[in-house]
Length: 417
View 1 (cartoon, helix red, strand yellow):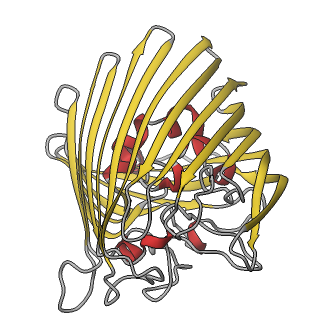
View 2 (cartoon, one colour):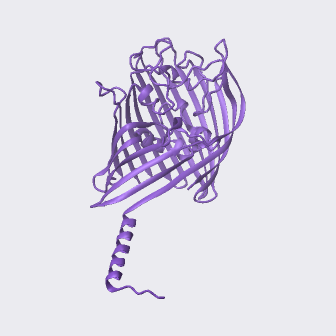
């Protein structure tokens, strides 16, 4: 039997459909992600530290997620917005990191360890957000470094001391980002330490300025993290707390060293960093340069910070200078190269240390979403590291070498959805 709508019912149905359509247009949630995995080779991977203090290492071939030895970390996320009217939107971002090699959570087991924030966005006034977010060295200057432009993990500066590889986040933070003013934008972030009786303890302050016009992109950033063993390096659920060392480790008879370039600086009262970077695109070439200066200040602050086995006092500076070039052979295929020189000042009984690193990469796009890539990096170290031992090479967050040099190669596939 055929059913006919009365004029009133028809009008009600039309209004309901209009409201539903309007509601759908005003709010949206997007599921997105990246899966990245590769086969990797390291000429020397440290496995332990002998009784004489000399590291032990061997060649290694293994499968790893892109965050550990490739172009980008595997992730999935939810990004949403709701139109509130008058040019104002409610926005949020929840992003999980995981390992393609074994399926485990990344970021120390955090469910949304990459990002977890909510905020308001105005076309005229900018964006205000709160939660777990990237600070501005990572977001502004990191975007212009070889880490992002082509090299991923293989172009990370030794120990990722300057945070250009996008793993440095601020918990409990409030962040403002301005609108774009003819290519110029800026932002500021405050991470609240949450310690009763002390506003500054465990706090993070970050700011940045960037400029983007024609083929030129440039950015400058500032970061100040109080008690960085907690506020900058102890931000994941797996962190060892105040009494442990979240910057790295000296290794043992059953474990390798971890970030020996900075592991001895866990007792710093403050981490202070200034970074500047630029890229310039001219035809098929993109040229880049980055300089960062990271200071661990107030070493020996045992009341709030981590261990200090060498009883260091004062401050130490870690500087990185990088130049890079990327060439598009075709619209689907590009190659890149970068050189970074890192040098660490002396402090206490520690002498200086120096690190030379060359990274190379090639990427072929099978489609808009799927890439095949190859990466290579070589690093040589000299001097004395933060543990008071002869400096060893360490490419990105891969296990350090047992010697002062290391070569790493990878071939991988990355798919974005």
